[in-house]
Image (cartoon, rainbow over all chains, first blue to last red; front, side, top):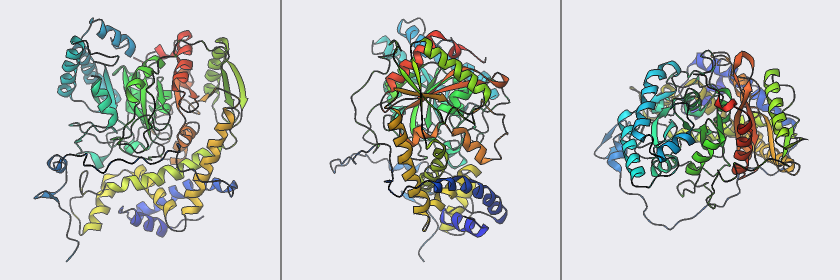
Length: 95
Length: 482
């Protein structure tokens, strides 16, 4: 598998991380090396193996549909970058 | 006082020979004097620690004390602690004063342990040398030109330098055991699901597990007794009967079958490490254990599998850092997308970005099956190797790391070399098995060597017994760099 600078830029865009040309090129070299290491996985035949997503086979617990959290809006918003009238502010999205 | 073990300090507090206020004051003084040398702590808050110490003294006076009441514990800066700056070693959270306590922090608070400070770590726990922290690198107390290991490098450095009798760590691919080995201390990653992940800032949720770091197995047992317990706020927390992890410490080891994976005793392990490990195994034979060769045929796959699964989970977990509700927000931006992109570009360091990009790629359309599903299939094969191996032995041993601590800067420009420092440790995370490291001697440049002990699921008490019996007949765990 060969990655290109454009691939790196596309991935960075998907990940919402700004990246300039120099950074993308440096990242390309490193990612290519890492993917060479990762590619060694392909040598093993796993056609009859079930994927393992988790170390323990536990069932998701359910709980009663009750309110368990108390209102902590002020405390939580005290560490927010920008708030107004109890709302989180972000740049305008809809005209 | 600094050289006393956590157990000894606990006994002195119970006998009222010292107070928690005195003990806490002394450790705070020591951190103030020496932290500039090691950079083991990101945040120290004397007032909050001393408040806790005074409450602990009241608990002791009222006869409500347990083993950890009044004991200073250094908390890895990945655990949210109410009112404490909780940075995870990142610029992204450099302004994050946690509004709540992690499950682990709550459990320490309930028994009256003292939070003596928040320890330095690789950014978002991604690293094996503690060189990726926004708060600067941490030094190894045995040799200031060596790395302490990572990601729980601040915790390991603090315990080794006697800045705290015990510390918490987290382990996603070796982040408790590798720094414990490199700093000559003991550390255990329990079975996945035993220690609550609530309020423990997530890196790779199916692999992350918190655990204690201290000087001896006995001290680890006391800390584990506090840290383990069901937490309904963690969806993978296990509901099990409460155990006393110190119950089997004194058991003799005769008849214990120690499995030695031939893949771990092969090319890759340096001579000095091998020499110390062989001597430790001889000691175990003297204690009545027998060693048997076992095989973990897929051992070499654990690093590639890990570097698909961990970044995949990380890219998803770290998407929450968007500069909206908390954390770093860029100063200027043109629109919402630009705000996300700039905030994340500025807030994350190079290693974190690298892993987010790997994860994003392996989960992206067209590559999911080739990488992510493939890695999950291999994860099962790796787990099956261990199931097979445990039919021939009770416990598995090997080196924790292929070499002793490397020099600061030696691997920081080469991610792959850095990743390979976790070659022996990451399988325990992929399988969820408990694993620990204890000091068993010194290698090149007089830097510590760690013995890796991998137990079967939920066999922590047995592992601590196995480690404790070794520590009764050797004194590596008592050696001090200071």
